[in-house]
Structures are given as C-alpha cells and as structure tokens.
Amino acid sequence: MLTKDEITAKAQECGFGTLGVTTADPFLSQQKILRERAKEYQWASRSGLDLMAGTDPKNILPDARSILVLMEVYFKESYPSVLERHFGRCYLDDDRVTKDRLAKRIKAFRSFLRDQGLQSQVPFHLPHRLAAARAGLGTFGKNCLFYSNQLVGRGSWVLPIAVVVNREFEPDEPTLTVGCPEWCRNTCLVACPTGALKGPRHIDPYQCISYLTYFGQGLTPRELREPMGLWVYGCDHCQNVCPRNLPWLAKGLPVNLKVAAMVEDFGLEKLLHMDAPYFNTRVWPHMFYMSDKELWRWKMNVARAMGNSLDDRYVPDLARAWGENQDERVLGMLAWALGRIGGREARKALNEVRNKSEGLVLEEILAALDNG
Ligand code: SF4
Ligand code: SF4
Picture 1: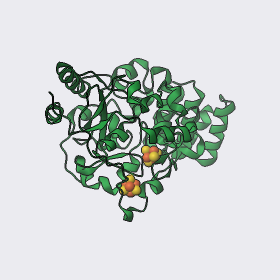
Picture 2: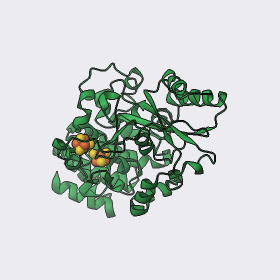
Picture 3: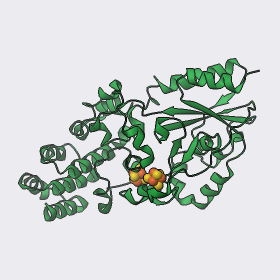
Picture 4: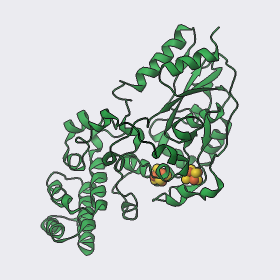
C-alpha cells in the first residue's frame, strides 16, 4: 500500500518543495465568502470558472478521499529587474502554454499516482491556497497571499497545486491562520496603490492592478492611471513591501537564463508596436490571459507605463504608435502618456493629431495639452 512518505518522496523527486495532505471535505468557509462577496467574484463566472463548484472536491472527482497539495516555488532564480518592474514574477516563467517545465513535472507526479492505482485530478477552480493551509503548509497574509512555512524564506513566492485523489491518506495538521506580525501594521493594505485591499484577506479584484491589466474593460479610468504605475501585466507590490518576504528578496539568487533571454522581446517599445504574429509567437506563450483580439489592452497598458516612467525617450514611440492604432482606448492612453511625460516634443506630437481627432480621443488630447 502506497504510503504518505513514498508520495512525499516522489513529489520531491518531481521538483516540488513540499507536500501536504488534507481531507476531501468541502471548503465551507470559501462557500460562505463566495456567497457574501458574489459581486466581487463575478469575473470568474464570466471567465467560465465555477468557483462554487470548486469548493467541493467531490464535484471534481466523485470518489474524492484526500487532497495532496504540492508546493511549487516560482521564484527560485532571479529575474532581470527590467522585467520585474513591469510584470508579476509568477508570469515570467509560466509554462502553462509551452508545457515544458512545471506541466511536465505535474504529469510525472500524476503518472506515478496512476501507476499505483490512484485516480487524480488537478482542478483550476478549487481554492488552492485554502487547501494548502488545510494541509498545514503555511499561513495566510493579510494581502490574500499564501506564505509557505518552509520554502522561499517562509515567503509568498509559491504556487500551491491541489491534486484530488480517490484514496484516503492521513491529513496533516491544518495551519488556517494569518501569520502576519502585529508590528507590521498592515503595510500591504496601506501600500496597495489602487486601494484594492479592503481589509485583512479581503481584496476587491476589480481594483487590483493584476486584474485591471489583463481583464480591465475600456480605457483605464483617469484616477487609476498614475497609481497603476509601471505595471503592464500583473502586480507584485503587496508582496514586495511585505516584511515576511524580505529574507528571500535579500538572497543573491542565480539568474533565470530562460527569462533573461526574454528581455529584448518584452521591451516596452517592442510591445507598443507589436502586431498579432509578434504577440502570438513571442508574448502570448508566456502571458496568455489576453488573446490577440485584446492587443489594444496590452498597448494601452504599455502606453500608460511609458507615461508613468516620465522618460522622454518614449515620446517618439508614443507619437509613432498614433499612426499604427485606430482603437480609441489606445489613442486615449497615448495622449495621456504624452501629457504625463510633457515637454516640447510631446506637445508637438499632441498638436499634430489634435485636428484629426474627435470624441473621447480629442478629450484626452485636450486634457493632455492642459497637463503637458
Ligand atoms: S497585486 Fe498590486 S494592486 Fe493588487 S492588491 Fe497587491 S498591491 Fe494592490
Ligand atoms: S505586509 Fe504586513 S500585513 Fe501585509 S501580508 Fe505582509 S506581514 Fe502581513
């Protein structure tokens, strides 16, 4: 009979830091949260994710008996700072499309289970962080993230992966607590630039930069443009300011060479001018929440980041992008970015397009000329 020690040894052989076990009982506290905050989770059902169904492992595997939680570290190696300032770290080495790294290791682990006569499922919609806490692998942060109790200096740079199986194993002691020190005084809540953290472990996803960068609708509201800063896809701010993450951030980690090779393709200028073939071959395989139908959002985010850089070397690119785009959401942000950078060349570029523009775009140009 397969033992927990043998499963743990296999998980480690497959490259996972730790493994914990919890029961296949429903996640009742999550059901309560989903009911109470229904409006805040509407985005999930719009994306085809039935989070309520994911709270009962038996909806995933009818004969579910245990959940094995694998702990993956996504920040083992360092990333170039030029990428870290624009992209969330968890997306930089994501292989959910290329399936050449993590996906292969999950497959190897599941093949092992299958060879031992176990059925398994790795669902997207199960509350993975809650499963990890129930499996005793760490505690919560007030920023809604999960902190390992063993890995990455007990930090939050981990991805719990819940594997539902049809055999019962002895569950680990749950660690369902918030592990933040009193003296921190809610640093993340105060530091969140868009005010998305409403209280300990309570996020309004619609105000979170991560959500806004890949699912935000329409031209980004003016009051959010400066707070969203340099982020183009995702946001790590509430993790970067967290004292629980300092030990790992202080480490001298080896460079992730695969990600370092992406620097040129992910330069802001390249992203601002990219076309669909460029996006589909160089960008989408790494960051896939938006399709090539949503290039407008990529370009709007890039233009906003360029504007917030206050770097006038971007003015010629912002001006050139005018001739490459018709979407008013992109044009509106190009105007805003030129106004934010300001100066003679930016004003010249705005004046050149002023008489050819109308409606929302003209409004943005006039507001930008007032600023710049
Ligand atoms: S990811 Fe960014 S925007 Fe979202 S809660 Fe954290 S700091 Fe706020
Ligand atoms: S910043 Fe402070 S309150 Fe927020 S998660 Fe970190 S330790 Fe907790």
